[in-house]
Image (cartoon, rainbow, N blue to C red):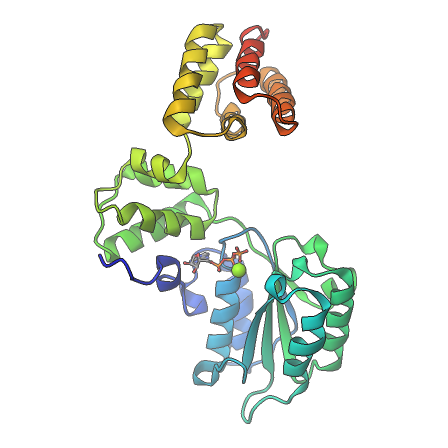
Length: 323
Ligand SMILES: Nc1ncnc2c1ncn2[C@@H]1O[C@H](COP(=O)(O)OP(=O)(O)OP(=O)(O)O)[C@@H](O)[C@H]1O
Ligand SMILES: [Mg+2]
């Protein structure tokens, strides 16, 4: 494998809507716009968590719609609102693109505004006027993580598409596809580990897979946890179980090795404990109490308290809980 190869997230970015993983309802609705009954579409808004296919779908939609006429600056433009920063770009770049007529044979141009939720309310007002004034020339695809950060007048002028985190099966399918294409070996446990650490974000899954593969060994569970800087959830379970069964010293030693071995911050460890509580076989009431304890110590760390002292105190508190 060469070092200067393309990042896999780009290499394996689906080029057509039909190749996108998951998001089935969204794909069906988008395909209506590119379908045989004519090419038309309203302004669109794509909202949802990172790495779930929003930018991918916008570009694939444009490609499916325009085919060989897909040309940057001519038929479409992709801007990132967060590096474009504020109202200036909305007044200049966006407006300049939107107000000129589409080239021959193209019904309208498409402007993709990524990270639209990072713009100010003023910039969004300007954007709204541009969207209204030049609808006949240009349709907008606004992309954001949180739709509630977009002003209501824009929300009501767009068709909303809500992207969901990808399911376990969808991510497994994609990882296996890439692994076999790249001829890399990956243990089933390593795939499980990837699923655990990425939380439905396929971009991170693909990035970690490439990072692990670049080491040139068979990809194991340990390797995945090592490169992602997460603790194997089983070890967190051991830690919690020891504390809850009042074996304080065992829990403390476990914690010490986790600190040393993984070099993680206390807040990371608490975060993973938080994730694992839900998988423990204890009463609902006990889970509620533990969650309150974790929140308390996470807050203390956020105020700059000493990690080791606080985490030990947290284990101590867990060890005297009534289960
Ligand atoms: N649904 C998907 N199907 C196939 N690949 C995907 C999908 N979602 C993400 N990917 C992979 O992750 C990469 C990044 O996806 P994309 O840029 O579409 O994410 P996004 O939803 O726009 O995230 P962000 O909010 O961080 O911009 C893609 O290039 C692709 O490799
Ligand atoms: Mg994106």
